[in-house]
Image (cartoon, rainbow, N blue to C red; front, top):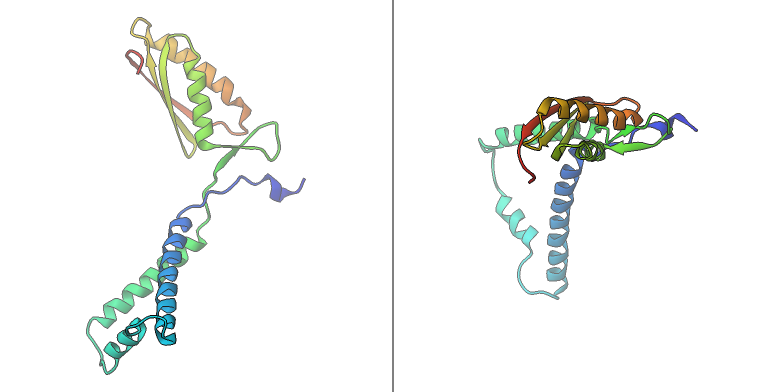
Amino acid sequence: MTASTNRAPAATGALEATATLLALLLGAVGVVAVRDSLVQAGVLTGTTWTGTVLEGLDGLGPQTWAVPAGAAVVVAGLVLLVVALRPRPRAGLALARAEGVFLRRRDVGRLAARSARDVAGVTAARARHRRSALRLTVVVDPGQPREPVETAVRSAVEERLRVLASPPRLRISTRAGGSR
């Protein structure tokens, strides 16, 4: 197996939204071009939109708003460049005993929440995985003491997460309450 197959899958990052916006703008330019072509061919009646815009711009001299507008375009270009070149975030966590196999972060959270729900005295559990920490919120049956249940939950979740090559830090908060 090569080293490239062992890399964690990468998320799309901010580039996906930027590419979608640029694709929509390019599509709008294409619609205008097709419409103007149909007007020139005589299929549609009216004047071309690009011709109208160019006639309006003809004869314009230097404007005071052009310098800040140009600076804004340069800044927008630099921001897009940084977004495009920025490394994408990791989308998965490697398993310890299976080379090249990864779990998504939300699946790690689901696995932890399911393990917590299997503990006696737990009525509900929610997990949120961020970077290297897993935040687990556990609702304990009102008749149960919270500390022993929290200890049992920590033990069960840590045992389940041992399948990961580097398990996340676990933060557990408990509260008394009924089922949701």
